[in-house]
Image (cartoon, rainbow, N blue to C red; front, top):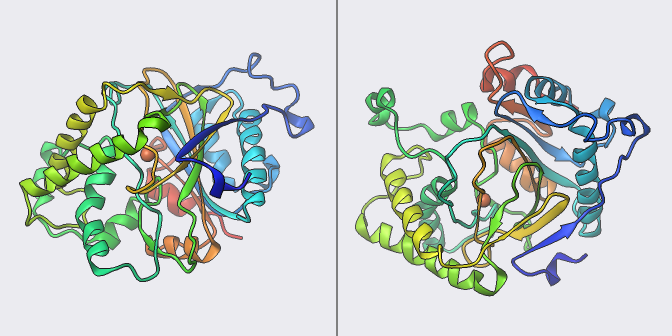
Length: 339
Ligand SMILES: [Fe+2]
């Protein structure tokens, strides 16, 4: 499957199989997957060897603290499909995130957005760089659940931020760093699935360009309301307010569109970026959900991305584990994956 021939997004069913004999007795119905807590595990590096004994040690730490039942059969089934897909498209490195989340009402109202470009042209035009500096915080906040500072955070909100320090201690769950690619044709698409719980929502392909235009208009209106506001902080109050405004506007304006939703056992291919990205949202989810996000990239680009966060390559870490395992940043230091 050549990605050049694919539209903004497409669902691909993959076979749920059990790659190794060791999983044949772990049928999902015998050992249903449930969550103990919300947390995520991320790996950035060459394609993993799909043998449980060869996974980074932090994966086992994360899985033991996060899931009940075995995640391996469904995860390896998806990754087997992903590896085949990536290999056929000459990709051998990726950013992989498994995000486990307990139910909440955070996505009762859809958060429609396109993902940021992961890898930008090597030397973007000046006005393009300016547009990213204006829009990226809003775009990131559109899909996040952060809607502004809590009361105890207000006292420190006026302090000038130090993006490098903040980003090191709070590594992103998905890369939205606009790394300048070493390639003339960087990857700006990804593969996702949901191993447990509801699938991602998409605006149908026929109305995707209209939805993108609606998103752009809402962002432009938010920018026009505060034309002098320029920042790069992902914790900016002004951007959070603008994002909330855009989010609410999009929820209303896109509410009339029909919606398509990925099903269990489907791999979703979709493009990112404001110009050709698929408009999507996390679904309403009041139960346990396990979402897997795969961002392929050239090795040099992913190395640069990790370096931007002050981390070595390859690397794996988990975020959000309970205190008896370690806070995210503690976990980040303690269970790193060195090859
Ligand atoms: Fe997204």
